[in-house]
Image 1 (tube, rainbow, N blue to C red):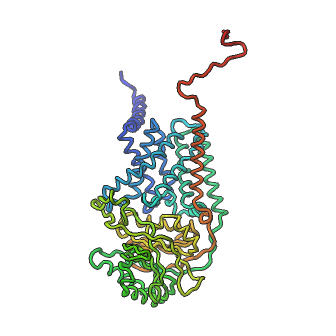
Image 2 (cartoon, helix red, strand yellow):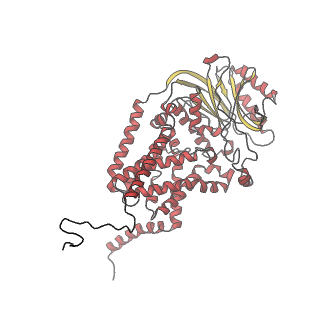
Image 3 (cartoon, rainbow, N blue to C red):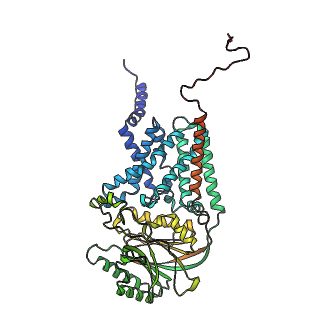
Length: 546
């Protein structure tokens, strides 16, 4: 029998739809799709910086998870997507960690397994409008718990939080001043969840639209009514970026000499502070008074203190001997005595967690051969000679700028200017320098304080109290110095006052969901439970009705 051409086209069209479904029924194809879908959000971060993509980037992953045949499979899809996300966001670490990056991603990706089950439980099948509405709150809350757990320093720190993808969006920065990066992440996840419901759950589209309207109204209200930081003056801050120096014998001395040369170019520019990048000095200034004297000469010539960063072995006040990374303030007479020792170290880059077990990582990558020592407390420095009203600095080192609690603590301690000294020279040519510089915008918006992100090799950037950029950034191809007229601000943002309240709100949402599910399970008859017959007034056990 010959099938008419029109019917053949209909059959072919059905086949075209069935083939992808058949592939997704294969564990291997489904697993590959989960890894690919989980990696999509990386496009929202710098360097691509497709910030708008963050609001739909999770939709393919969530659609895949909700289509899982069982809750166990949904958890696997969540885990595999988490692997894809972690590898994509940290891909620039591959030259340093090699295959160990995949191992770490597989371990950390397990945090997304419960989230996958949650998506499937609330959005799988044909959920009711009430369940879909619950998903709009619970699914973002579940993701936020993942971000909170992996923000622990030992698990790599808060790199790649979805909220940080909105670093150049003014309404999102205003939200950050209210609830930190956590509130921005909740917004991004809520919109992704609403889009998923709109695409896959027709009967619950009203709930999705309603949730989207609530998000839009809340963001608009924050944008209109939350006050901006009040400007209280200005400070002229110079950033010195020596650029790439070829590694090898004498590289530290050549970098120091180049920083000297660039600092001399600032003479006569009336600056208040000069900032060098991380590891800009390779010897303890107490052991090398000649280096301290050279920096003091620069301070006298420029008429401003110089904040350097010392990466060297020394003995601290408590008697510990080892390598510290320290922000040190140097004035016209030499080191002022203000020193901040880096508190949160980069796992594998500056120390190896459980070295007795994971020490083999040094043989497959550029992991730390010796653990750095960490400081014990944050420090607020006051520029000397200006009295109590002098400019108060809150220094951070390297990836400490990723931790919102650290900049919040410095602000509460009285810092007027936040400074992050960093070195991304190992990751030139990747997306890491742009991603790292963007974090300072969130920290400035959260704290209501300007922030300077000074690096050895770029990207160096400065942000005002609201998170907006001040002046042009210094790219990875620059070896230069630049002066920024930085606005200062008074007052405290809501985030500085109340802290991580969105996290506690998310915990409350998940607790309420668990309570509701537990109550429903308690009320539901168990399998095989006999249900007694219902008797009417005209029948009894002895005389059943006919």
